[in-house]
Image 1 (cartoon, rainbow, N blue to C red):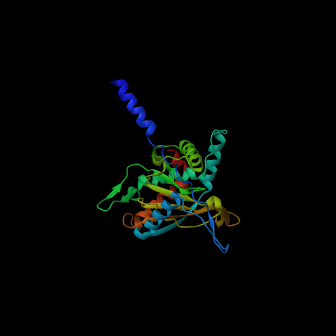
Image 2 (cartoon, one colour; image 1 turned 135 degrees about the vertical axis):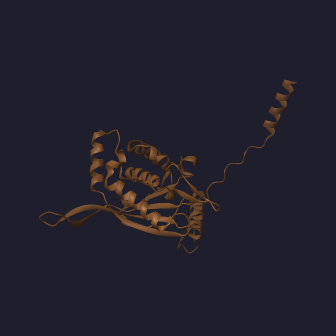
Amino acid sequence: QVQFIRKQWYQRRVRAPAAAPAPAAAPPVISPDGTFTEIPLTNMRKAIAKRLTQSKQEVPHYYLTIEIALDELLAVRSQLNKEGTGHFKLSVTDFLIKASSKALLDVPAANSQWADTCIKQFHNADISVAVATDSGLITPIVFTANNKGLQQINSEMGQLKDKASAGKLQPHEFQGGTFTISNLGMMGIQHFTAVINPPQSCILAVGAPQKKLVPADNEKGFETQTVMNVSLSCDHRVVDGAVGAQWLDKFKSYLEKPLKLLL
């Protein structure tokens, strides 16, 4: 009887039609008059379009901008990288992730999501970071960033960026998150505002560091300072203006006194 069952199973397997191959992506099409090219939408581009359109249509955005001095942060970063002797190279983004996570615990109302019948307030800060790839924008997540040091955040972000560039991120590595950072500073953008990544309630847009003359108690009466602008986009259903301002104040304090991030 066992042999008969095995024979029946084998025959069904042989007779079973082979799975159809996945359809190949349609190639770009040049218009008859040659004035434009139609580029077929990828699944990722469709998802981006759907989610961001939904965000702008359904989420009442407002925006808050603040200027942050970076000189102490850059000095601490340089010192830590020297002591790392090549084992790691901390980036400004690593500090942004850590500072965001600590500020979210200080102001938990900003670490929340609208859920129609309630507001979900999270106990850990899972920080999504926007990463540009050839296929489109994706937001890998540093989970529980509030419990991780700068070196661990740096290591995880390096791995996540590599996987994102290679198209190898798993869904659990980019779906979720409680807060997003979008940093265009490395591209020279000084200021911008970002679209909230639903169902999150906040996204931080980070501009490029720039030199600025500020008043100082010295012979010249001024000194050069490195500053950057950041803009916080908030969902007004969840995060009131005063709450957004409190979060930015905490965030600014961590970056301007970065040794507090090491505590």
